[in-house]
Length: 225
Image (tube, rainbow, N blue to C red):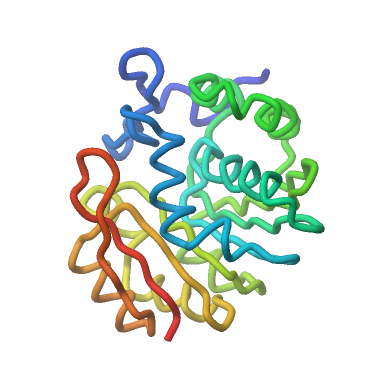
């Protein structure tokens, strides 16, 4: 695999957990990143129970692709007809080597991770795996999301912590999330920061606080009013 511009911009805690040097924040929980994704992003959006043909997930912060693969695994297990649609916005995409190393911690996802990593390594940002049509839109979401023409049924808000990555939690961007949401759309995020909750409420979401994953006491979910 070719050297990637963001290679070297992460450290590895305990050899397996990728931590962003730019934001001094891990890409997923050391306790169990896959369990965290299932609790926060799938459970927080009522998935897989809300899946239906044509369902569209959108995400802020693609990271290692873990959320995408976990959603695809749930989609396949649910036996929904057709393909899951998935759009993710990522300012600092990781290289295939780093993604492969990170996803290696989740062997149950290996059958899905292998074709994804192969496509990513080739430079593809439109990913097609059995049951999945995904697009990763590179660049600052404050500029790329307003230009997006899609509308999501569920949002995964997975940027780095608001205190370290405030630009991905700005009120104007939360308003764009509402503007690019289908009727009855939901959202979930690991953070329960008051500023984020207020911005989402101001954007038109009915906000709830739920028990978080692991050491995080609370997380946030929302439904478009």
